[in-house]
Image 1 (cartoon, rainbow, N blue to C red):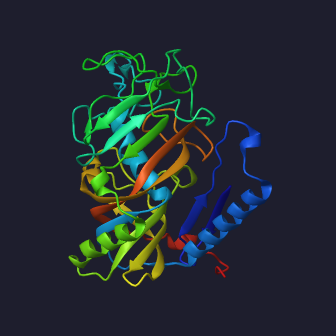
Image 2 (cartoon, helix red, strand yellow):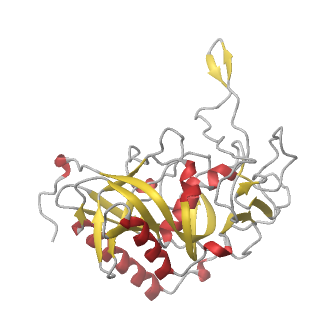
Length: 342
């Protein structure tokens, strides 16, 4: 289910709710789904009425709920998918080899630090057999293996299909993709675990963010709970990727959180200067959250709708990033609604 609202200044606020199941009887009850859709509508309308920031925000950011899983989905998972990119070659017809669309894989960070010390990451396609992201054999017929990708914050191995790498042996049963197209080693069911010493409760997580925020002269911190689904917005939506090819979609549900517990909704923000090293600046981890999403068939590409792509599941902790930069988005004045939002 998708909900969109146009704010009085012309900014579009959009969000969705997605149920990912293997069989129809696994869906929630109709009443439960109606309730979720009603809550989605309320959230989008509230977001359209939220205030905007006049200046950039620099300081700690708390990622709660779905935003926590999206943080790792966009910044960590591509670093653990290890199929090498296509090598182009010159011909009399020009550069060829990459197919009709460029292959934007190649973010793998084998032997490099991707998370703080003590953190670990595993991917096991058999983790929850009833989930549609689960499989026993990958798209190349190789038995799916549980892979310990990260230990002590360093990428020790990568997700692979049969396409070889110089620095790793053969497939670990993670080949996925569109039938008939080039297959890649892709995530299926990923679990990210923080160091036990870094784990705190949600209240302590926000309190730690406030202590960090005082250094920036603010009596509030930014809490992000949901990010925009890029399949629902124009392709030029900023992701602040700093030229690295890895970025974060803008927040769709975000709040100013004051020390007394007050929360003021804000909108119209975009991340700036996002780099994979952002994850090294995690200063605390909170409760574990999980989420299903549809991954694009090609690494680095996008999906055409929230239900297009490959079912994928991720479990990750809520976190505080020590410092991030967000800048205000300027709505197009031509998009101002004729009838104001009420």
